[in-house]
Image 1 (cartoon, rainbow, N blue to C red):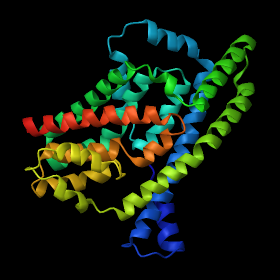
Image 2 (spheres, one colour; image 1 turned 30 degrees about the vertical axis):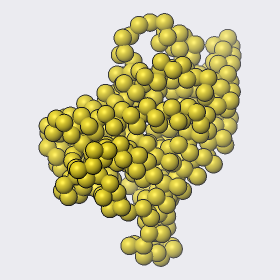
Image 3 (spheres, one colour; image 1 turned 90 degrees about the vertical axis):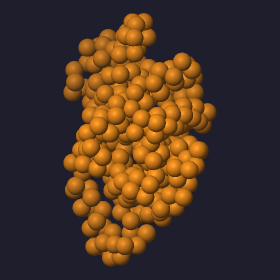
Length: 325
């Protein structure tokens, strides 16, 4: 889907700058260019699309329906399943997260999507089948969906909306006013576009610096932090290998497809599968670049709570994998 962006990154780094393909700088810069273009493009498209959706669908009614009707956790499961079919890494999922929050979707439901989306997608599943077989793939997919579901359920109990940043609260207020004005005046789509476009630019202006900073950190980690550095901390003799692997994974940054070959190498060197998968989940589900992006929409306290809950769920999954496999 994004091959043309990779071609631009390759041409810039290896053609224009003429950097050595094996160098850490080339790898970090290539990663930075590719992810910057991809995420900013996704951010633009998603915010514009959600702006159109929000201008026609009553935000307050959606919010009220989800808060008043007992769906017995179905909304969290649906959000997790939607995360499965969106082939995004953790940073690419943040634009949709912003769109969901702006659209009035409860925060716990939105978190369920944010957790599952980077962990499970069709490309990662295909690679998982080839590397580890159907049984382990099935368990991994189920655990990824359940991880998002339970994380969302747990986080929803804390009533965390108060920890959203003033910037997000202002977006919500503006979206509500625009919706009421559109409904009252029965504004045609052609006349709604300038308002939607202005809101898109406003959101991009607020988010772009955080996107660039987050991707820059990710690029440095991707290019300069060797995966073999972590091997000695994940041996099967270490009782705390799973939490150690999960915590050490946070500085890394990759999508599920990129980290799976590393997981295969770790397992081949005797690292327990559950520990290796916990490391993978930590890499793709939690990262410093993701935290940088989320800082625009969440206070540090909320980011800490989110990372803490997901980390605990990943650690539990790692131990569970080690027991059953």
